[in-house]
Image (cartoon, rainbow, N blue to C red; front, side, top):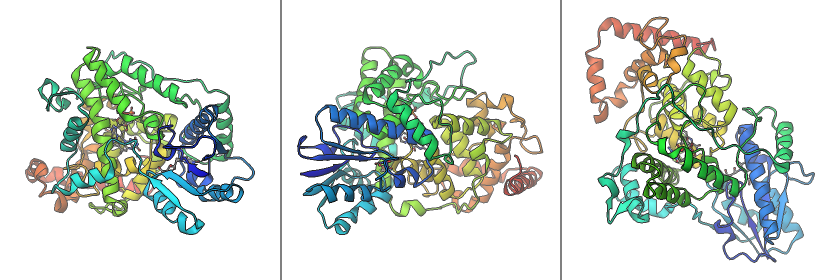
Length: 511
Ligand code: FAD
Ligand code: DLZ
Ligand code: SF4
């Protein structure tokens, strides 16, 4: 008899820990535990989503004849930790071996590596083959290069899986159609509603538990409409393909007040927890292109996110951990402003993005990168503070994907592993790609002074502050030429506006 432990983000019958399972004799253990629910204070919706998805998955396995042991969060005997729950099973059943799929976070992986010694039991950790690029394969690819870049990794992955390929060339003659994917939002965009699923009995029970047990966690628990089963997640995917994929590329970078979901897919929660498999999402999008249902810029753009970015950041995570967690190339030191929790700021773009994050446990990529991320980069917030925030506010957040996006993509704290230069931008970018500035107290057209958009002077303050580290970056040359030509009066105004802004931030005054 073997004990097969399934973690909350491994909810797939095809997960490697279930390979060659003996349905009758082996025990499948799934448990809701305090340690995993609180290692950061996850958004309430994230906990509710995972607990409900775990319960539905366990029920599904039971119906198929598996021998499932399930620990509910409020079970009296619940020890509160994965190790404690495993020990409870070992005390009662004659187990020969524990089998699990490698956890996707370094923290838990290193803990579990010690189990065999602690328990005096064999523990077999199998690779997570739900990803399309094995960590060894990524490490080999990275080792052969002085510098790793997502674009070249992605081309290899397209070839490997023969996705959107014509022989060994990309179809339509281009690997990447990003130039067509930067349209600002039109005024009369007709944006379809996101997938909504009504809570059933299981979900309602979970919602009560979360409401009662995690009152001090961030975020709104209600309304709760996530998919919680594989069938529902497949419906969500199908809705995306049929209703939003056509416009995914064109408006990929656009932001509209009151429209948190735009034309994105909203499947990251389901992919990262195992309800959806990455290749099936890629294949469905590819098929939509071949059926003439969606244009190449949309389909290629969507596929690049999953086959390219998602696999690339996971590769970087395992390549660079554990050192990656403590890098701080730009030596950022400030603490995260309180408005990242409350949304109380006069900067309308940040107010909108924080409020939507609190309501939905979701923000789309450009909100995460160019509004929320841009601000913490320009303001020099310490990477630990930023990482903690991103890891707990989003329902799709796990360290393997969150850390490279935060430390690498938004903060440039890795000195250029994930991106070749910082994604710093002034208010002009946000104004071009959104309608947020229209209702803002600040004026995006003003560069300095009390009414000026803070992104405008903070952008130059960032460039000045980090000159030593960034001037030699070939992609920053033009920016530093502009700085050299800057009028002295403007330079002084930028410095004094920024100092005043940071002083107010420090005093926790409303900015
Ligand atoms: P779409 O825009 O529809 O994209 C489709 C899929 O592509 C996503 O579901 C996701 O699986 C994948 N994808 C897209 N961009 C990325 C990326 N940069 N890295 C990895 N996968 C990507 N994604 C997470 O899944 N978890 C996180 O914790 C997370 N944290 C992020 C933090 C920051 C600072 C930034 C800039 C990005 C982060 N992302 C994260 C990536 C991306 O923003 C989300 O995957 C995306 O917003 C999820 O929404 P969607 O499913 O509608 O995505
Ligand atoms: C995120 C999460 C939460 C909130 N709760 C649980 C849980 O109670 N039980 C569990 O097995 N997993 C949970 N998870 C997911 C784990 O944190 C995740 O498996 C690790 O972080 C590795 O990616
Ligand atoms: Fe944001 Fe500046 Fe626009 Fe206000 S003016 S919404 S702060 S970019």
